[in-house]
Image (cartoon, rainbow, N blue to C red; front, side, top):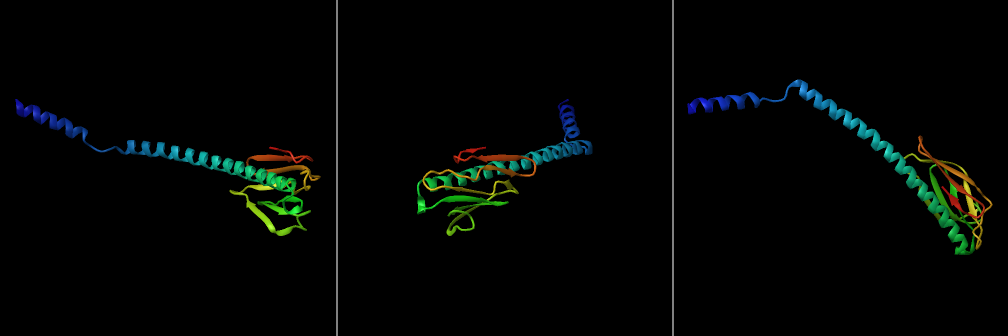
Length: 157
């Protein structure tokens, strides 16, 4: 009787010790594929949004740096920013074309961010006000971020 019980247990184990069926394998692969495709699209969307936020922060920081440099009388000159399509240049001088090139500081936008709108802002020495007012629009293709500079040099975004 002992022999028959052991034999039956081995038979049962043998029956369940087989591999996966083709259907089970295809179901697992298709679920995994769906998960990967959803994760990839979410990742790229989040990455584009993060690049837009980082570029916005960099541009605002550049404008504020130029304004504080002008207010403090750094270099006994006006300070400004030149906003190009994919970069920002902080400069010392009355305007971008008549600037002192040795003081230029360049910041590049990352991840396909482009700028349009207001292209130059120059702040007066000591007062920190500007006559160049308007809106800079940063875009990553699907989202936009507006940065508004008024005559007092206040930035809203």
